[in-house]
Amino acid sequence: MERWSLREFEAEARARLDPAHYDYFAGGAGDEVTVRANEAAFARIGLLPRVLRGAAKLETGLTLLGSRAAMPVLVAPTAFHRLADPEGERATARAAAAAETIMIVSMAATVAIEEVAAAAPGAELWFQLYVQPDLAFTETVVRRAEAAGCRALVVTVDSPVLGRRERDLRNGFHDLPEGLCCENLRDGDRVRPILMSPELSWEHLDRLREMTALPIVVKGVTHPGDARIALDHDVSAIMVSNHGGRQLDTVPASIDLLPDIAAAVGGAVPVLLDGGIRRGTDVLKALALGAAAVAVGRPVIWGLAADGERGASRVLGRLRAEVEHALTLCGCASIGDLDPGMVRRTC
Ligand SMILES: Cc1cc2nc3c(=O)[nH]c(=O)nc-3n(C[C@H](O)[C@H](O)[C@H](O)COP(=O)(O)O)c2cc1C
Ligand SMILES: O=C(O)C(=O)c1ccccc1
Image 1 (spheres, rainbow, N blue to C red):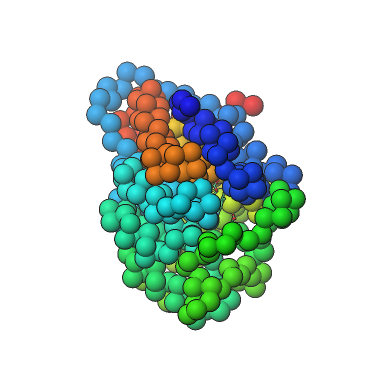
Image 2 (cartoon, rainbow, N blue to C red):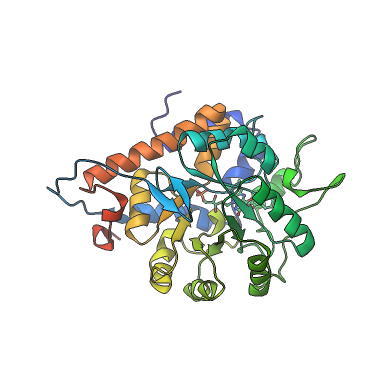
């Protein structure tokens, strides 16, 4: 099958995946209003290219919290990669290393963080954490991530409880198949369940701040007021995200939330964004509106399910090529040349 765009990988992945697993990856909460909004919102924003700027040499690289990335597109943390490919997160990490970008490894990975790091020596890895009510156990997970060489902690804060995903309920999908588990949750001879806790508060973030010297990224901020509070808690970056529409349904598209959050943060820390990025032009729109970089979730899974490590590599490579092409067409020599004046709301 020809794969000219990220969307074509989804069709191939769907044909190969167990339908219940496809639904788990693709689906979201409630009526999936937010899932659809994330992608649709990009189509309502236009790009205004600048001309005759003599931008010959292109530079798409950046440094984020001390990690180098060759493009402003990171791999978002997504769970259960071994449902998509037997190599699972090892394959994804190798693909991220080949694309010279950062992979945020999910706490719910089906390969242990140490093994992911060992499988992809060149990869820049960050670790996504759900703070567990048992802070001592949380600390053991943090220590593992540090020892494996992860360079930042991405703390997901949009999940005081898991979103209600009706596709999963309909399919009866609630457990990993025999032989797969969340390897980062091993505790002696058992594997703990990942707990979502409505009791989590900024105090837990402060405890985490004392626990580790790693930069902390808060993932799942949608309200500008929370972005301001996060700055008072010494976070190193803020990630605007509605969890790909999988938590609270009807949260607006993340790209539509970005301008207010970028204004609230005022450049104090980098603002990252995920949700609905499917094209290089989407990346440019997010950067023009104030994001330092974006992350992609589902497209990487579709690449992995379609063709393993090679598929994930191709997804990231295609996005990089699209970013370069769109930047050139916009008259930009680097991502720093993008500004809010280059985007226009079209409806
Ligand atoms: C199948 C799947 C699993 C996910 N698992 C996690 C997770 O373990 N931790 C987390 O913080 N976010 C998780 N997310 C959310 C992603 O990090 C990201 O916010 C979202 O996928 C971005 O939207 P996109 O898929 O449109 O790119 C998951 C998303 C998907 C689709
Ligand atoms: O499915 C998800 O979106 C997710 O974040 C998650 C949370 C806990 C375990 C597995 C996945």
